[in-house]
Length: 360
Image (cartoon, rainbow, N blue to C red):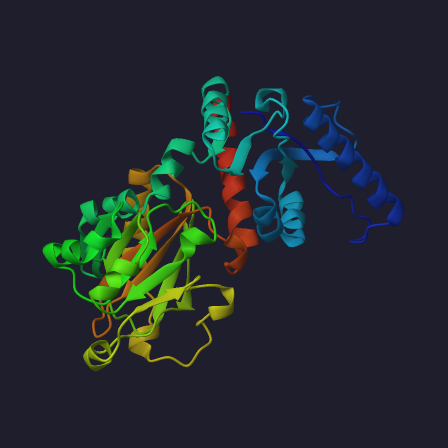
């Protein structure tokens, strides 16, 4: 673990002069350039405490949504420096890094990271690429939740009954009947790779319409949940829950009078926030924190991941029956309230933990 020195702004009487600011900015840029070149210069005069260097390899979309100015500014104040990883250069030639933060896809990138983890065990890679790959398949994604059979005095967590269809749409009606799934059926792409297409879902109301679906996909029984889902963000041991509007309930009368397949590009998003809406308390009440803590702890262990979120619904008419309907790796943390503080505290704790291990 390499913990480097951080540039800490020097203040006179609580104020910063322009000359000081320009000098410190120049020193920080010099440190960044040196890290990118693969070495660190002698510490400048203003370096006062350890710096945690985080190399990041993210898509342009993720950089825009995640690496916002407020996050980077707060990170600098806490002693964390974000440095872009050059994908055109060998990863081992860059750094040195304390943490590698990434969300890229492809076999080549996964192999690069696995090789890097073996040759640089002192660097924390968030998260192991093989563990992330587990969440790219909606069949295996929810299996670990089903295997947990989590139930305590605060509630029960399960997954909707589901069926995987890899090909032959014409066989779907018979497969659904044989599996005993009840209509309406939610259809989701089998591959969950973070693309816009992977977030599309369809709701099929009748048997004939099932043949219009496009495999490979996962079919889930639709569970009435009051039109609200809970996005449970997990950053290490920190948990943050927000409400989002979801698909409305389907009553028996509506089901008998409806037919066809209704497609939805993406159900939950920042614009659909339900945190400030006037909702029935039975629908709006957040899942019990002790239940979420137990669920998150077990999933961190089983998945081997520290950065993910869960889409959870409460079955309408119950208070303690919850279903996990999706798990996403490195979700849109920019939509999570106070994500800057939560994320920087997490990175700092990782850096300090590694430093203590190395020192001992």
